[in-house]
Length: 245
Ligand SMILES: Nc1nc2c(ncn2[C@@H]2O[C@H](COP(=O)(O)OP(=O)(O)O)[C@@H](O)[C@H]2O)c(=O)[nH]1
Ligand SMILES: [Mg+2]
Image 1 (cartoon, rainbow, N blue to C red):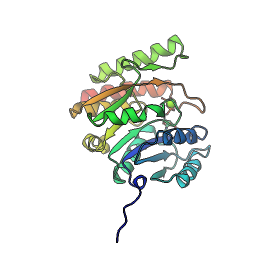
Image 2 (cartoon, rainbow, N blue to C red; image 1 turned 135 degrees about the vertical axis):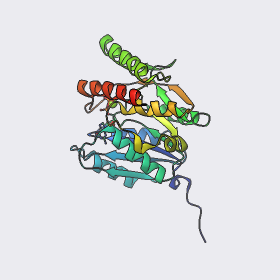
Image 3 (cartoon, rainbow, N blue to C red; image 1 turned 180 degrees about the vertical axis):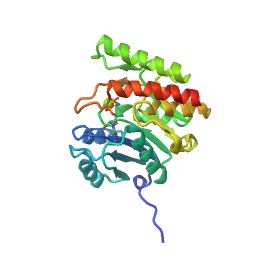
Image 4 (cartoon, rainbow, N blue to C red; image 1 turned 120 degrees about the vertical axis):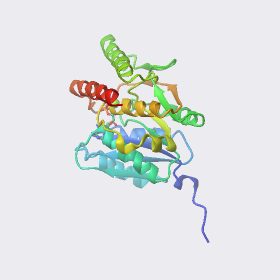
């Protein structure tokens, strides 16, 4: 006789988090996400051999968590894009119906997860957005930092002809069918441009995209892996993506 498994051992909603040196914030993020009490929720952490031991912390959190908690350990830092693709594939293989990507550094508030996930009842993709009505960036950001973020976003939207207002958003929810339609294997960009490439492929495939406002907060611990060189590289790569189609 087969018994029905408890709800949380069936993965419905996977939270995919790439990590590189996020030992301080990952446990806080997991506990805040769990506090949202979302049925059928599980995690996929993709760690690139973080020297600060984030991978081992993720393993410990997996042992403590009652539901599905997968930890992918990769050797050495291989970039955000390939980490997401590995995490998305694992979430799909585990049977998740909804997949949400978010950063480990607490820039993305877990409190909006229920609202963001609910958007997927009527849209293919739900983008947590800084640049839609009600969204904002950290009020502590300097004027110059705001300008760089805002105009960088405008520039990327123009290069790719994107309708979505937050083109580089790294906090997004997808129906599983949406990720299947994108064709994860053909995504090329591994760094900063990855999010815009995903947005471009979703638009090209004619998916319905809604933006859900949130306030982006500066990371509270650890270091950003972003650099000027990565941003410049992304502009060239995205221009090439647009030309090539
Ligand atoms: N696995 C993996 N995670 C990464 C890599 N680069 C960045 N991350 C993670 O991706 C998320 C976003 O990176 P972050 O440095 O905060 O970028 P920023 O918010 O644009 O400054 C964080 O959770 C990082 O730990 C990488 O090469 N591999
Ligand atoms: Mg960050």
